[in-house]
Length: 394
Image (cartoon, rainbow, N blue to C red; front, top):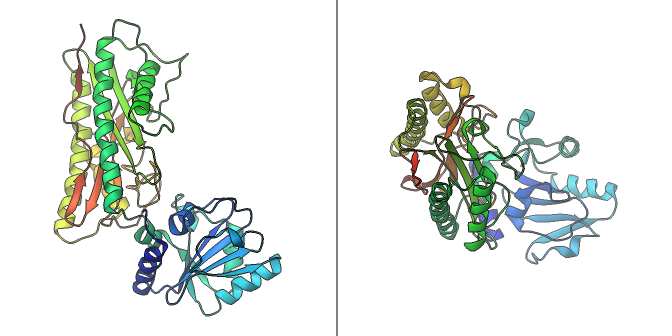
């Protein structure tokens, strides 16, 4: 994802040549479209709408107001500017004059909200030039979301630290079980470890016991979080990246029990969740061996069917997984046939989570791993939990 603009242009033109597209028109206003930054980098203090045009053949163009045109450091890219709206429309029409079908960050019926970055009025304006606008979902994934070797290394470093910290958090619970330890205090412990390891704190982590673990995004607060006691079920979801520009994130969820023996129902539900996770990973592995791409919705559906056949389909309340990048929820394919319907292919160089969950009224179970699809197949980049953590105490 951290790549020179020339590389992005070449990759996008390669994709467009194979998919009968005449160009890719990237639009941004007030940093509403993160794909613009992924393509040309961050441009500070932009105050007016601007466009980046990549034709399927030929040189790219920056289209910007005269107010902002000097902010672009890309001196090797031709720029066209305007002052008035009438001039902007004229520049846009002339740029698109020979094009028939172009891609933009648009999703029909907003089926993929992470893709739908351009407002309806701007799409209408572009279509008035006579072009057909289609979604850039697969195009920008192919040209901007594929990781480099350094991207993967930064993610792997974050993954190792998260795994270390989640084990420390379970130990911290056991060591302090008789000292009025709460969900919030454990979350604070995790955040303090992030600081010590020079990791980014955005929001979270989730530290949830018993019925609270039935809320997938439970956020413990100081005044209302529960006391953790013997016999409690504990779910911890933590995510972060190393501090510094361009580092990739990691995201894991583990569960444990304060006591010597896991309750039978918790163990049974845990086993189903783990089974769905591993079934999804094996499905990806088999498809790769067969030389077949898997679409995001497809892998969600097979894991969802696995849980449904076990009798818990109504308790799996979210998609199977999300894209991972610099943002923890990034812009490549999601594993989703439930909240959305993601038809994008899972392609080599993409990282994503696999995190099935079952959320009963009395407790919830989620197991989250991160997976990188390499040229040789899917590789789990985080430790795979195989049994609930037994949280010992004195």
